Every structure is written in C-alpha cells, then in structure tokens.
Image (cartoon, rainbow, N blue to C red; front, side):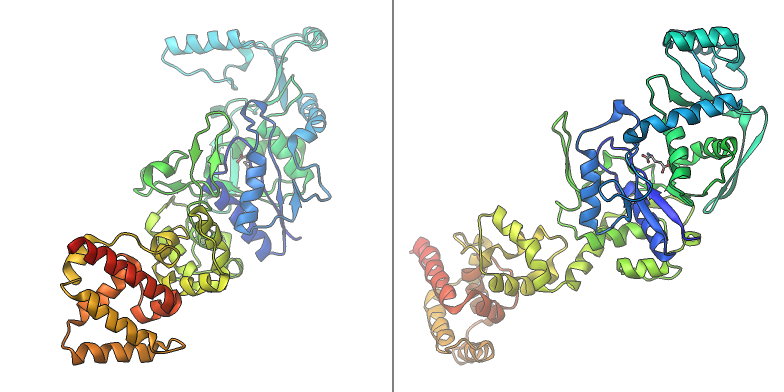
Length: 507
Ligand code: GLU
C-alpha cells in the first residue's frame, strides 16, 4: 500500500521552522515511497485562531517549493481538509465512544474544577481528572442515567472525556524511538469534545487520520505525550492505528532547550520561513525569505537538522534528499540550530545559481534602493560579486557602486594611496584605457602596467587610487574586469569627479 501522510498545522500564528521540517520530512517520506502528502488545517480551537495564518502556511510552502498532493487549497477525495468545515462529523464519534464505555460526559463547572485544584494544592498535590479522581466528579459515571439525560436535554455545558482503563500499560511503537510504554493510571482523562459542538485536537486528529487513510504520523516530539491517548483512541474505535514517528526537537544554538519563537530575532536568525506581522500587536518577526535566504538552502539545512544520509554529504537538492531519505536515519537526539551552517548553505546555493537565475532575486533589492537597470548589466554585476554573497540582501552592500557613482571617498584609503600628483598620473592612465576601442581588458591591463613600470610608479598606489575613484573605497573585484562592466565612459566620469573632489579639497 502506498503511504499517505499529512502535515496538520494549527493556524495559530506563523509556522515555526520546526513545523517546516516536519512537513519536509513528511514530503520526503511520501515522495520516496510513492505516497501522498496532504495538508490538513487543524483549526478546531477557535480561541487560538489567528487570521492570515492559514494563508501564511500555504505561501511558505509555495516559496519553499514543497508541494502537497491533497488538502486545503488543492482539494482531493478526502475533503474538506479544514477541520472547522468538518465540524458536524465529529459528534457521532464522540457519542459512539460514550455508548461503548470509552468516554463519559462531564458536567463539572470551571468553579468546581477550580475548587478541586485548590484542594489538591493545599495538600501539595496537583489535581488531575483521571482514573483516581473521576468517581468524585460530576459526570455520567457518577450521576444517574436520568440526571445525565436531563442535563443534556436542558443544554447544560458538558465535555466528553476519554476513560482510560485502569492500570493498563499502553504501548506506543515509534519508528524513531522504538517502544514507549506508559501506564494508564498516570494519564489524565483528556477532553475529546465540547458542548459547543467542537471536537478537541485529539478527537478530530484521530477521526481525520482514520477517514483520510493516513498510514504514517510523522510529527514533532512535543506530540509524543499525546501518542498513548491516540493509540487508545484507535483501539476504542476498533481502527488500525497508523505508524508513528516523533521527530527530535530543534534546539537553540547552544543546545540549551527548544528553539522557541522568540529566539530567532534575539539570536540573529529567523525562526519563520516568511516574515510575519502579528495582526494584533503589529510586531514583526523576520523570515528566511525576507532575510535573503534561498529556499533550496533552507530546505537542505533543515533536512540535516535531525537526519543525515549516513555519510558526510551535505549539499543535497530536494531530489537527492528524496532519494536518500529514510525514517531509520532520523536521530533521537535534539538537533542544534547553527547560524553559521545556515549561512554556509546559503552561500553555497547562491554560488550554484547562474547570474540569470539570481537576477530576479536582486531586482527587488535594487528597487528598494531606487535603482532600475538593464538586465544584462545586472547579470554582469552579479557574476562579479556572487562569491562575496552569503545572503541575497548582501548584494546592495557588495555592489551598490555599480549602480550609483560614489560621492564620498574613504578618507583612510585616500590618505594611504592617493599621493601628491596622483590626479595627473590617473589622467594618463585613463587615456591609455580609453585608447582601446572597444575596451580590451587584457590590453588595457598590460598598457597600464607598462606605464607604471616605465615611470617607476608604485603599482599599489596607482591601481588602488583608480579603484577609489570607481568604488569610493578600497574594495571590489579585479580592477580591469570591473572597468569592463562599469564601462569606460562611466569610469572616466567617476575619475574626473574623484580628482575634482579629492584634489579640490587639498588645494
Ligand atoms: N495540529 C497539530 C499541530 O499543530 C498537529 C499535530 C499532529 O501532527 O498530530 O502541530
């Protein structure tokens, strides 16, 4: 049977990169095994619903280039894929569990629960609604059948709670962790359904995984504590449970604890795929896209946070990752996020792209700085500075002088290089450069070198002064290549201006 897996985010805010990694591993597993990946939106908790979050999730995966086969925004035979649109179908399942003795109605009011909590606290204990306490509470196990019916018909608020069997070892077979065993006496009777007609995550998740024929549940480690309940729910319904794989946590760079939503901007890297502006507070959190990462780099970096192909191979396209992926090679231990590694991947992926492929990323960077330019010129510039870029956004810093002539000249470099009489020397040098029409890089280079030798000039001072005139600072790619890209006429203009500015101040 071909596997069916799902990514099932709750639209409670921007998607954490841990969630992106979960989706990626589901994708790789599905593709590797000719399976199907679906996107289900788990929006039953209306109190945590955040407008725009669903759209954000869809846009993030579009940017990353991870397509879903079925789901919200795509469709498919098992829809609707948004749980709020499936609301009506969960009720009979909750009722069935009650009828079969696997669940019960609980009518305890918030005040009653609070009193129980306080009572436990006074004895230095924590209250848990479970096998030990359920018979002291107000529920269909303690009330008469008649009373329960009266309350239900009257429209009293209730919840349906799962009824764990007493003192039973529950076995969860996890593909990554092996067998996890927990005794039912330790577990609380989780709420499955509420009288407002909404199921909780647990019920909706299990019912949907069953109805959508999910074969493997691959999700973050934070869901491992819920797995025993899920295993029991499958048992209670008499359904075959899917296989479980709980992924290791993504840790802070120093390994101290889980990478949280707040860490990113605090530690200087994004924890979200796209920028997110909180609709309530207006607070902005940075995203990989806006920070100048390439999606290929983000995918490659994330794939290796918790998995490796069994050797040292690091650079892997989505295709190669798909070929090599296996759940057995996912590690149990948490994976430390590394900004240096993220940067390294991004640098490498930028180098793999041609100037033609990179140009569309650079156009917005130029626009932001009020520059529009010829596409061929842009591509030539990209070729010259590409190896200096870690991020797309570095482009302006590394290449601005190709688009805007300098108006200032680094005073330290001027002091060091531009000695008395340099203006006259550069005028002669420029004439030599202009004598080759069309411009010939090699010939211009050789002629200038000859001139420097014949006049016994300091090569570093002459060449760097010319560079200063073009760039405004002592930096940039090879001088004669740069002249070819900037254009001889423009270099002439910049030189005249530099002489005027630098020597004008001096005289
Ligand atoms: N809605 C859950 C989440 O937000 C899904 C967990 C699961 O995959 O079962 O992550």
